[in-house]
Length: 149
Image (cartoon, rainbow, N blue to C red):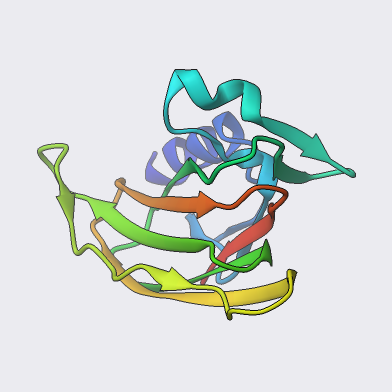
């Protein structure tokens, strides 16, 4: 029964990787899995190429994504981002809906805009709860994707 419930959860979120009833060892999500953190910023974000999310406004905007996890423990996270002066952080959601195990904001390297993979840290997750990604994306910046292990 647990295996069927996990499969149902996986299908509901479009994640096709499944291994013996638990989340896959490595998962990739495209940048378009992010959305504007505030409704007023929704017009700033558009699809870039096939799967990236680009900020077309003239100021930095906040984008968020939430990924449910099915295995308890630490999960390393990274974000692929085009830009500089942009940042991302991760947190986990505990059983009462509060943020727990908040990571520090990780910034892109200063200088000209370039594709970078930033390590947003290891997050402890309780079974059936989520990892939340928050990114401040500068003007013209692109969220290419993010990974969880």
